[in-house]
Image 1 (cartoon, rainbow, N blue to C red):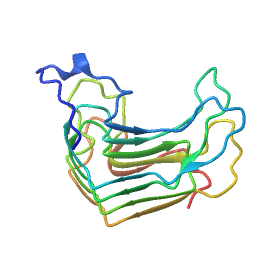
Image 2: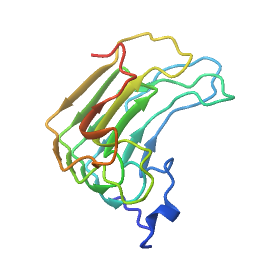
Image 3: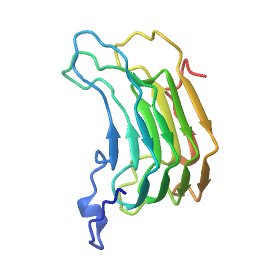
Image 4: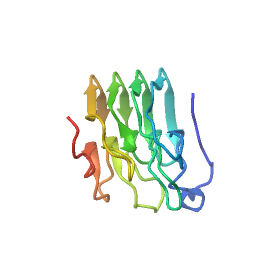
Length: 173
């Protein structure tokens, strides 16, 4: 069970867009990148979170670093996510290879409980790509099935809905 509640009526004062309930990343600033894989998030209940995303999987190279490891082989399944600030689930830059998202229930995700409208507001947000500077070695394949998404997205956001297939999706199937 994962919950972040700040308890104040003005959540905007305490909101950090880089804070997520679950943030899976990999090694960064490595001299020779290699694939990190086989991570699983399942059978969890995320509710009433004011953090940016319930599940955030991301590992891009940051300024001043060498390379970041690509991360893949994730299985995200059998989770219930309700009343979530931004995306319920995001597979972001640095996420490569085969990844699975299945049997999840997302209700009221991609909402906006603060005045910070800068993030994406989706049920599932897919922005899979290799980290900056890392040469692709294999295709990116997303297996997304048997998910139920109800009331996703905030009408004031430019990226909102049940699914967002982001602009970094070149080279995946």
